[in-house]
Each structure stands twice: as structure tokens, then as C-alpha cells.
Amino acid sequence: MEVVIAPADQLAVLAAEAIDKLVRATPTAVVGLATGSSPLKVYDELVRRHTEEGLSFAQAKAFMLDEYVGIAEDHPERYRNVIEKEIASRVDFAPGAVQGPDGNAEDLVAACADYERKIVDAGGVDLQILGIGTDGHIAFNEPGSSLASRTRIKTLTAQTREDNARFFGDDLAQVPQHCLTQGLATIMSAKHLVLLASGKGKAEAVHQLVEGPVSAMWPATIMQMHPHATVLVDDAAASRLQLGDYYRQTFLSKPEWQGL
Image 1 (cartoon, rainbow, N blue to C red):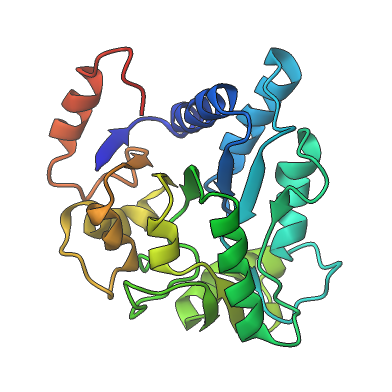
Image 2 (spheres, rainbow, N blue to C red; image 1 turned 120 degrees about the vertical axis):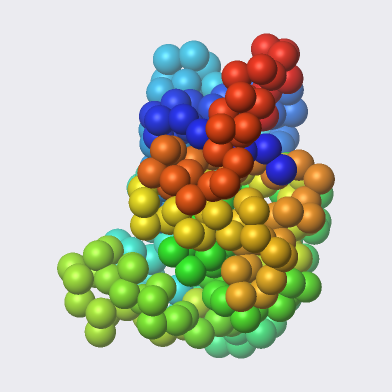
């Protein structure tokens, strides 16, 4: 696992650069997209590269991490609509190239299995963007999630719903209680994981992710078992890391050609 500690704007550029290199080298690449506040600057940088530097997603595919269950299809916080607004409509993905789990399906179990098949049929995710919750969840794999889990329905914890209430006008009652989410094993099947976190509120989760034991109580810790995982954090999010100075030294000493 590589840990990079830098200002949030620089972290966004690093993540976007990794996607840029991937898509230019392999135009048919598959990218995993996350919602939340962490990836927004990454998407802005990708849009800039598309507009100003010719970065094209015309042959690429993308898969979303998760979706609320039972939320209206035209709701602005439906994750499919968020992804459309923040990235998909701002670059040149082909129609149907960006897919997400169907949180309004009549048979949610079948919808989850179908989503897993679609990812496999696409050749798997080449680079997955991730955020992390204050309780250590990635996607909507809440504490206690099976480390071998696949796409499934989950009940959101009270903490996650409180954290997400800001997207619903601070009205907790409007936050859905259930979601469909890629499982931890699904996420771990991606070839490269890139997680971004900023702010002191994420410091304990980042500490557990990087330096704690692998545990279902902190689901993101499964990333320690991945052969190519990158953790991009600002100083505040890195404030609990015991080896912070070493991570800074390591990044500054990297060969220029290496990349993330």
C-alpha cells in the first residue's frame, strides 16, 4: 500500500493523472466511479483534461460503487444522477457506458447478481476510485461487513445516514435506510485501488486503514491485502498516522517514472 500525504488539490491531480495515463494507454479501460465529496476535485481535473488536453472516454466504460434503494429516479441525490452531473455528462462517455446497480429493481437480489456479471463481462475494473467513511466503510460496506462480500443490499448505519444528511438538506428522515453496494471482494477484484480522504474527521479511519489490523470492524482495512492500493490523504486526514514522516519521505524519494 502506498500512502501519499499532500494538499487536497495535489491529491486530486495525482488521482486524475493515474486515470489519464490508464485511459490514454488503454482507451477501452474500465474505471470505477465513487460519489461523495472526496472524488469531486478529481472529476473536475478529468473534465479539464478532456476539454483542454484531449483526454477521451469515448471507448471507456465505468461502473458505480453503490446506489440508494427506493430513491426516486429523478432525485438529485440518486447516485446515478450525481455521477451524471459530476463527470459522465461533462466528458464523452458513450451512451450506456456508465452503469450502476439498480436500486429500484423489483428483485434486488437478482439485480445485484446481474451487476456482478456486468463487471466481469466488461473485463473487471482497471482503476477504482474510493472514499472512506468516518467509521471506515468503503462504498457502503459498513462495519461488520464480510471481507468476502459481493454486490448486495445493505442497511446503512445511523452514523452513515447522519454523515449523508448534509446532501438531503440536513433532514435525516429523507436519507434512505438501504442501498445496493459493491462488496469488499468485488472492490478488491479491481486492478488498482485509489482512495482519497481529507479532513480531520477521517483521521481515525485513515489510521485504521493504513496501520490497524485487517478487520471487518474497519472494512477499508481489507485494502492492506491488495497488491496495488494507493491512499491519498491531506495533512488533517493523516494526522493520526504513526509513520506519517516515513510516508512523506517515501513519496518524495520516488523515481519520477514510477507514478502511483
